[in-house]
Image (tube, rainbow, N blue to C red; front, side, top):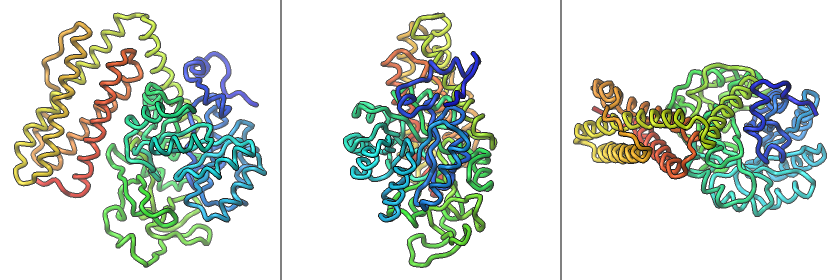
Length: 492
């Protein structure tokens, strides 16, 4: 089997830093997995990720056996590295699913990923044939059920993920709970597009990450150029969860997508009886409100199709080769984790302490600014009780995290800053309430990014736990404000 890492460069140095047991289980160099995105993750993308040292899954959801055979042949022609196939039994007609499983067994696919409902009979059938099974889950109950059914590893999906979302909890809250409830290796998924996200997940106990959106926007992805460009053009906070893209899937399943005329309610009743054709894929009609996303082989109204994207889409700035994306993520994650290891070993302790105090002071200034903005904004909202309560809750949260940060700084033997971040004056200069709330959310997202970068470097368990809770609280508040802004429920 070819070795994607040669010499003694940064990639080689990253191997011992990132290596985890899941790498041995899957046969990959890096614990970075290409999410098996239906339609998008075809042979070119899966082979590129595997050849570069990650692990590529082919997204073969509801695909005919002939396509599965062809894609497997093309992956094997492109690389001798291991790969897998992703199937979703709950969204596949039983006869087709049976044929897909037979094909995976006959083709000796080394790993099969499963998603949505846990079906023990499917897991056993694959395991009995010598195929390793990775099951994606969105709750502790599903994780325990998948482990009991025989899954070799799990992908824990937070609600930040693009495409179909199984659970309703943020990754930072769900991940530790699942890790504490199972014995098999766990990968993290949901909003991860860079090395900081991978390192943050690994700091919480994950052995690596499954990544979709960052690889969707690559040259090798089978997504249509329109979809890739929409991701590149996206901003933080653009994505939303909705159940309106439902044709071909169990009713009520939520997906995370980019906004469109469909999500704004401009294209009619998604649950009516009418079937409106908006596109074509080599003779197959693409219906409005279906789960189909724009692919290279499609024509039609791409804007009205399901434009899947995770919450990290706003941090993707260009369409690049998949191998370049993978290598950048690996190097970033390794650098962060190496820094954390150095902090634990006590090397250059004064420098590490100084850097930590600077980060905590910076966060304190930001939280103090956020608390003042929320306090004064809440006082202005007198005609909307629900909005007033939301902003007051944010003020209370911001004040609480100020207190936590002050205590942390004093525990380190330092004096907390008394400054208020410049964010306060910038926010209060915005007269329009909706615009100010959007700006407040930008500030909260800045805090989230800072925490994601800081957490993997922390050796103190109590501080790590406190700042993890701070991260989760900010993500919840961001989501609540996003809903109000999207629904037009902020006026002033």
